[in-house]
Length: 128
Image (cartoon, rainbow, N blue to C red; front, side, top):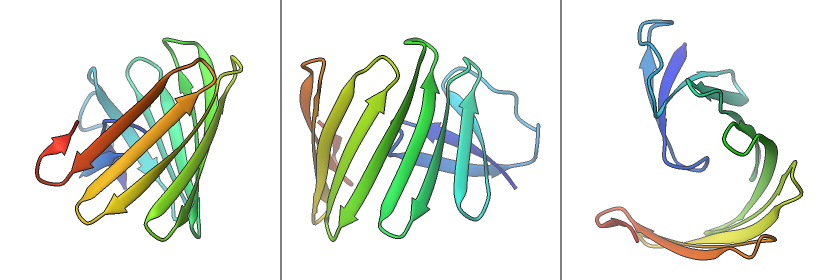
């Protein structure tokens, strides 16, 4: 079964089943396919990524057209806490964590390029 996915980030996906080739790719939408252990998505601009889970560990890999770089990220979940590390082909690295408290998820990320951010997401009020 083919899936049409809307992606805010590699971590957040909204997937809708569609017939194969029924909907042309448009800007912002990705066309995805999945097997028992792998979800693979690509968009009209040439970006692509895959997600594979093994127990409490999730592996993500992808290609970003704008930066012309490959990237990989590993997420490890321990209860309500998820740690992640990533590496891009241009040498950038990043680390972060997500912590769930009730309906809110607190995210913190730091990268080797000096970027840092905090993102708080709530099921009712969205992300800020």
